[in-house]
Length: 476
Ligand code: NAD
Image (cartoon, helix red, strand yellow):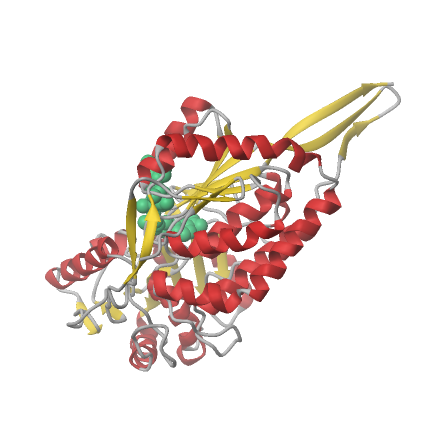
C-alpha cells in the first residue's frame, strides 16, 4: 500500500509511523499518510524559514508568475485532483456548469480560480499622510512563516484559500491538512511544488497534536485556521501566548429566512443546494430554515421533491448527486441529532434512517414540527439534515436567527429586493446573501462574526491579513 510523503524543502519526506486514509463511500483503504514527528514539524518550519527571505525578495512580477504557473498545473491536473477529492472526501465528481451538481470537479476548478485571482492582486505602497513637513508611507510586508491548518470538508479548496494569498504576499507556508483528508492535499502540494522554489510550500501530517506542535514553533508568526469553533478557541489561546496573529474561519449555524412574498417553486433549488451542498458539510450552508406559516407546506413539499430526486452513492459513479458523510465522528453526530429530534416529537418528512451497507451514507433528511431550543436547531449538524421552523412574525424570525453565538452566513429569500435587503441588514452574520446562500467569490471578503471566527479571507482584505503594516515616515 502506497504511503504518500510529505513535501519539505521540495523533497518527499516519510515518517517512522503512518496512519490510514479510507474512502468514506466504500471503506476501501486508499493509502497511508506519514505521522509527522515533532522534529519533522520543526524541520518543515525551518525549511519554510530558510526559503522565506529569498521568496519575499523576488520582484513582485516573479512571485505572480510563479503563482500563475501553480494555476496552470491546477488546471492541467483538475480531473486527477477531483478524483482524489471524491475518493477521499466523498463528494460526487459532479460538474462545473450551472446545471451540474457542484462536486469535486467544482472544488478542483475553484482551486485554480482562487489561485489566479490572488495572483492578480497587488498591495502597492499607500501614502497615509503628506504635507510640507512629512510623508508617511504604508508598506505591507509578509509575516515570514505562515502555519495553515485545514479541515476535511473542502480539503483542497480551503488549503488553496490559505496557501495562495500567504505566498502572494511573500510569506512561506507549512500546511497541515485534516487527518481525514490528507492524501489529496499531499498530492496537490506535490504537483504544484514544481512551480515553486524549494521550501516555499511545505506539509506536515497528523491529527490535532501535530497542528498544535506546528503553531507553537517560534518562527510561525501568523496562523490561518479553518475548522470547528472549539478547536479555534484552543488555537487562539495558543496564539495569544506567543502573540502570533491568527485568522480563524470557524463553524456556523446559518439561518435562512423565507419572506412572505417568496415563490416556493422559484427558490426551492437555491434553498436545496444552499443546505445540502457537499451533503451539508459546508461551513456556510443553510442549517436552520425559517418559513412563514402560509408558505410552510409548499416550501417543504418542493424541497422534498428535490430530495427524493437526488441519487446517493459512490461519487465516482456517473449520475450520483449525493455522497457519504466524510467520517464516522460526523456520521454519529448527525444520527444523534436526528434521533433527539424524533424523541422531541419532530416530524421526519423524508430520510431519517441510515441505509444498511458500507460507507457513511445518510439520506437527505427534512425535519418539521421542531423549534428553537431543540439540539438539531441550536447545534451545527454539518450534515444532510435540515430543520424547518415555522414563523408568524418576521421580527420574531429575525430575533431567532440572531439568538445563537455564531454568525458565519445567513440568507433572506423573497421577491421584493428592497424588503429582503432591509431584513438582511438586521442579521448578525459575516455574509448575508439574498436569494442565494454560500455563494463565495475570490474578490469578496469572507469571514464570521461572534463565535464563527476572527478576520476575513479573499480579496484585498484577505491579502492584507497575511501581511503586517510597516510605516516609513520621512521628515521633509
Ligand atoms: P476540527 O476543528 O476538528 O479540525 C480542523 C483542523 O484542526 C484539522 O486539521 C485538525 O487536525 C486540526 N486540529 C485539531 N485540534 C487542533 C489543535 N489543538 N491545534 C491545532 N490544530 C488542531 O474541524 P473539522 O471537523 O475538520 O471541520 C469541521 C468544522 O470546520 C465545522 O465546524 C465547520 O463549520 C468548520 N468550517 C469552517 C469554515 C469557515 O470558513 N468558516 C470552512 C470549513 C469548515
